Amino acid sequence: MERFLQSVERRAFVTARMATHDDEEALDIVQDSLLKLIKKYSNRPEQEWGPLFNSILHSRINDWYRRRMVRNRWRVFWRGDGDDEAAAGPEEWVAQTLFPEPDQQMDSDILGERLTGLISQLPLRQQQALMLRAWEGYSIEETADIMSCSIGSVKTHFARAVSNLRAKLGEYR
Image: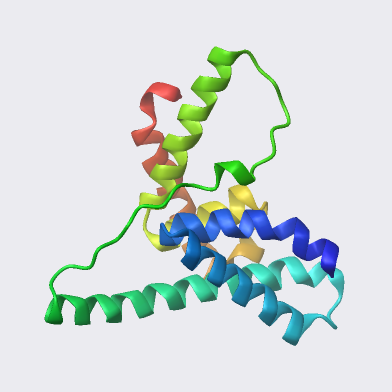
């Protein structure tokens, strides 16, 4: 179980960070998800842990969105708009595996930062479909189970996410 947790922790953080735009909230979501997996599902077969964990993670992200909407309603009522601070991204968590030429590395870094920003601007369901399919490598059926929606809905959200990213990344295609 420990090996599995170490293998998903960083990817889960990136996913939660893109959804919340907040390192601390993302870490809390990941920690809660990992704890729930351990408490409720550690006795399940190892091949089930990945889909179970991602289902828990995305449920926690959805819960965070709901709580935030409620809190923002109260903020607007009492104080006006909330203050969202943009925190630094988790780039330092990603291990460097290739050493390209400096200009290629800079282009890649710029594209990575831009892509991360654009993904975080997608609607939540598109973000989830894209991250589960492209980042985590789940099938359409597994993604539908994790997101608790139909296969058609996953296809639609994924296609819209890819289309939005292609439109916004026109010069990099």
